[in-house]
Image (tube, helix red, strand yellow):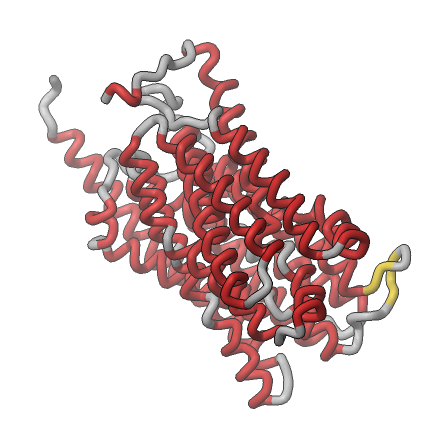
Length: 433
């Protein structure tokens, strides 16, 4: 294809070039983080300025999450179809869409306009997310877990740097102008950096020979992936772990208030909730490269077993020991640390199973599980209202994590070993060319 006529770096330059690709992707992801993690700071000022109900404003957030998640397979397919230049075009589009969405938010005088802004920014954020994760797994077959983890960390922890600036700007110049300036800056950075991105050409990425994890010898098309039982098993596992995390992480402020610790000052004038928020974002972001790196060395399933066992324990601890300010901060941080890694472990496992050629599309198909799991958030409120406490929610979250540990070790691992053995047998039986 003429559009893919890109001159590859020499073998000696290849390694530094792929790290540049990873860093650019990480920065682009960090620029998108505020669209999700910074939204909460705008809700109150919008409600006060327009006398909108908070629930109506949060419909915009639901629209954002839905489009950021569910459209990624289409966006990934477009990237894979274009080829080598696919990442730069999709990320550039994503930067424009994200900026346009927040610009509309800055001018919105009706809820309908706010919903339109949320839809456009969700489409943009999903395009950047799917592309950067897909590019990482293609460039790093030998360090797939670490590469995806670092990329996903940009989205998970990127908002930490701007938490204080956003709040101060809203206080000084208002939420509308804050939307406008962050749209301009974030969208502009992503658009400029997008033109540095591209996928590796055939044979350009290093061989995956030295890796210590199971990897498929062939690349499966999205249609083949959707007909594979192991994909749907991974999908169910993703939903269970993501749902358990969202049931708690999305309710941290409410839980802290119910425990009576939310507004207790504990460090340098910061309340329990503020300190927990900062540490939780760092834990959420740090978990992704850490557990990704671990999985490159001991395998995906073993790492899942460790992370999700700790996660199950963390939910239980929050219920029985998280009722004082510092124990709340510690237990909440452990939950975020053992939940955030799903965004590195599952894409890595998916690409290990189904190959790199259609990795952006296939990983995006699995990522839609996040959207499905979001419906567990209101379910947690129903359970809490019915039982009068959070203990049943924490118990359910723990059980889901322990179930996934069993599936990873005793179902997924044997299935992958069997598939790998069949591939090796077929490869041995093929005549030498």
